[in-house]
Amino acid sequence: MDDEKNTELNDEIILHDENVTQCETCYRDCPKLTSFDWLKDISNTDEFLDILEIRFKNTRKAYYLNSNGLRLKMGDIVAVEASPGHDIGIVSLAGQLVLYKLQEEGIDYREQEFKKIYRKAKQADVDKWKEAITLEDKTMFKARKIAADLKLDMKIGDVEYQGDKTKAIFYYIADERVDFRELIKALAGEFKVRIEMRQIGARQEAGRIGGIGSCGRQLCCSSWITNFVSVTTSAARFQEVSLNPQKLAGQCSKLKCCLNYELDVYLDEQEDFPDTSIKLETKQGTAMHQKTDVFKRLMWYSIDAEKGQTITCLPVDKVKEIIELNNNGIKPEKLMGIEESSMVSVIEYQNSAGLESLTRFEDKPSAEDRQKNMHGNKGKYKPGNKRKHG
Image 1: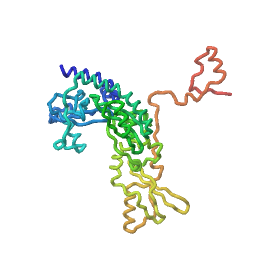
Image 2 (image 1 turned 120 degrees about the vertical axis):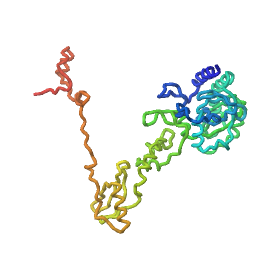
Image 3 (image 1 turned 30 degrees about the horizontal axis):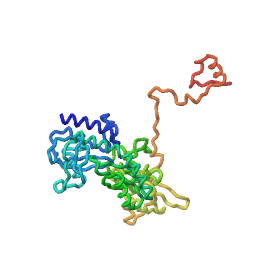
Image 4 (image 1 turned 135 degrees about the vertical axis):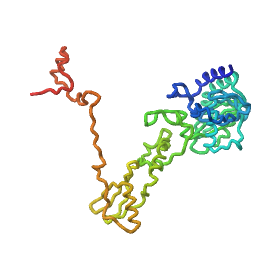
């Protein structure tokens, strides 16, 4: 009976969570920070139920100890230990998969001291939690006004109340270090709660606001990314992407997170590629690297000759062979490359679907046909049929 009641409370409170998006797999309203339990249908795994992952607002997650042996599952609303008082969160992961995530994050559960899970959330706990959620927007707007009056160069992006309404976390963005001691005093006097200031970056702010990326889909940071990995321009260089800041930057004005998605594939493919800084010595001159097609395993080199610059396409194995010859003091006559015509394959498309010709709109009706159509003589002209004139 308690499980059914807790499920009803979860379905009710999840509607108030701004991090909820519709899951394309199960067509349910799933939280943004949910974790997929891929061991759920495997019954022969060792249970690891003492530690659970609890999610809160604004990408905040933590591990808690189930010291009371409660029967908890993913989606349950629980009251957990906080400093001070208690907080309300939702179980985002339970079972054997928690152990794997701890190992991935480098946390030794034998030595780490975890905060405790007190109980499943009661109706009174959920009511107070919902009341705290309704205060967050009003608190944020007032806090922005107070910060502006104090002339602080910062932006308060969000406010998160603790489940028992004894503490509030203010998330802010600032380019430089901000002395907010006076701000904390003003906020504590205004809202009568304990204040915690937490700085977030531009990526977290973009994920909180959301939007549509240049790919036409919802931003990754607002749909499924839970942690942010640093992105550098070397990721673009390894993938032979043009270093255009306008195309590489996302809506947060930082490098796009998707630059890291295929980086490992490119790095694995380029393991046996020669160093592009090595010049190829030939009797015609010195050849320098210009560009690389990673998956076709082709490299382009140019030679500055008297008649101008010549670009030659070479396979990776041929480049390695020339480098080996140069190391032995041998210079080949010239770079025997691949002709551009041999790399281009012509694909002939056939109209196998029975569609009309794509040029059917190019033949426009004459003025005489338009007059006849206006007087009801329709059907004599068919688009696509060429009309003979003269």
